[in-house]
Image 1 (spheres, rainbow, N blue to C red):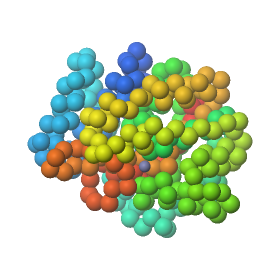
Image 2: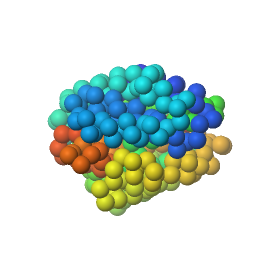
Image 3: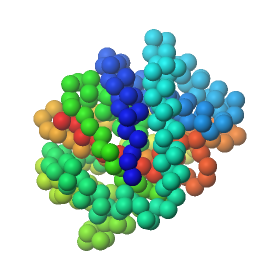
Length: 271
Ligand SMILES: [Zn+2]
């Protein structure tokens, strides 16, 4: 299964030209572009659309245009191909990409060796695009691998339960360590920030954007990226759900929702 990368790269290219923009705003722009695109394909209510438009209005005017232009068009392209991909992924257990053995073999073959492993619990596509864009604007070479780990349940346990086959305990930290050993890395870190924010009671998209300290996550990764190549990945992403009260962030959502990103964990290489 090939992941639709060209539209993601378009987003990264556009976002990486905003090098001077505070990371928190860059994240907001990327996040809002994807959600705005998702709401269009979802047939959202006026109230749900108004919620995202209100957040967009809070972005400095000079950058706001991007959410109606270049970045948005790439986000729309991405969301459409992503939805097709997820629709075809209805039979998760026959998917090779849902199997850690397969993923580790793929990484060994395509990446070989990397300096440091970073596992972001609940790190989703908006964060991966934001971080990759910022590293690209700092003249790092950035790559997103053309295969992703598919997590059909959108929860950590789907991944960590597979660790017993490697004689390991079912903790996400153990996955990070397994990646470290597989790719002969020097170190690994697991960052829980995104998952903690997503688990706040009924977290609206506005709360989510305000609570998530992207700069802190960036600094933690940049500490290593200054001197080494870094592989950034996650266990699952998150979903954007829409109900009569508004738009929320969660993961492992079982119903229909505008953006079902919790099923995917990308691999980004910064070097
Ligand atoms: Zn969680």
